[in-house]
Image (cartoon, rainbow, N blue to C red; front, side, top):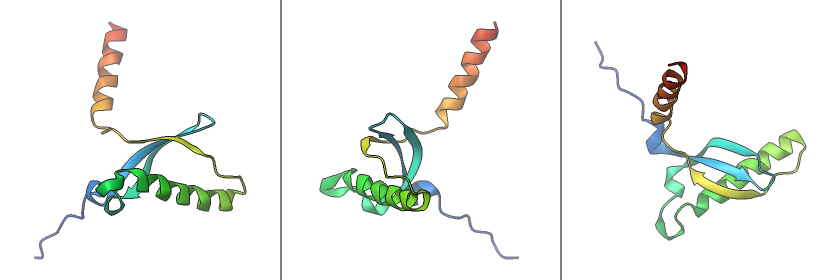
Length: 93
């Protein structure tokens, strides 16, 4: 019987970013290739990649792309659900 191999984790292939636009709207978990990041530019190539993604989206939707105000790496989502559960327990008690 052949041994099943696991696929690569997305964390090694992509880095997730939260984007806040100048109008105040926000998108979470925008994927950018990890190979684009690092070096002297740091996360700045992610801004270019996300702007290219936004351009494609705007062409399909017919709406102009929004200007990016801030760009931050997404935090690990594994810790957030536990904190929410704890808050719910405290409120009900």
